[in-house]
Length: 70
Length: 265
Image (cartoon, rainbow over all chains, first blue to last red):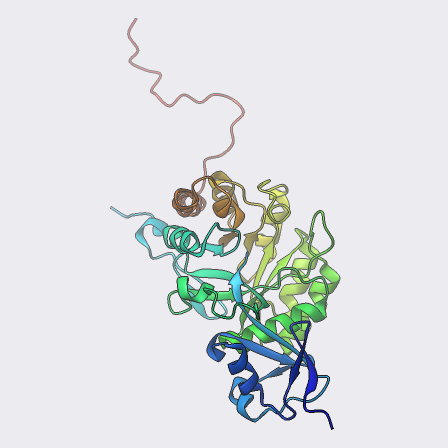
């Protein structure tokens, strides 16, 4: 059994520990969860569920924030 | 003596149950720095600012964020769907924005291809329908087309925002008659969004009776953005006052302002 699983974060391939939570991933990246939003396989992940969402192989995440725009 | 309503500050307007005094909405893009963004927006007097939703830079998670300079506590954030060319992209983007910010007042734009980025009304109508049924309050960027504008209003959009000219073009109001027609037909606020190049364009939009003006590049790409922000604030107020005052009739001959009697001989 593989020690890691492959997911895609903002279009980039990433290896994580099996069953790693979304909260742990965001912490590892170094993001302030209060300022971002996450979509997992095109579904919004409510912020309150980050600690309990276990990531799975093949997950495609989009992590976004607000930037300047017109 | 009575002051003019706009100058007296009792001429507020309402969108989706929220009341605002400033009739200028500004974008937060295309500035040289976040410091300049903050200074220009403060000078504009705007209470609503548009913001874009983009992927975070995973390699630089601690980069300064817009929120640190233009706080959502001080301004109403209006998330946009800039760059979205399909209804699905726009809906996904605004669902993310709602999760990031916790509010449902949004600016929808579904754009056609370059070089004009003209609103794609088929995609816009599809996205508006999906967003409204999902509980969003949609201010919608649209073509200067009274039929499409009415369809968007009938769907439940809370503001109709026809373009003055293509995004970032600075060409001003290329079709003032249609803007005026859309305003006359609408029961929800009508804003000119996109195309404003300089202060007189913003004043003209307000003189047509629009409820507010939305612009970004006209300030951000001015040589002195803070000063242009001051000019835009004044122009929107002047245009609003001129509209409320009611302009004099057009008269295709002279009508002397000074008495024609008592002249020296």
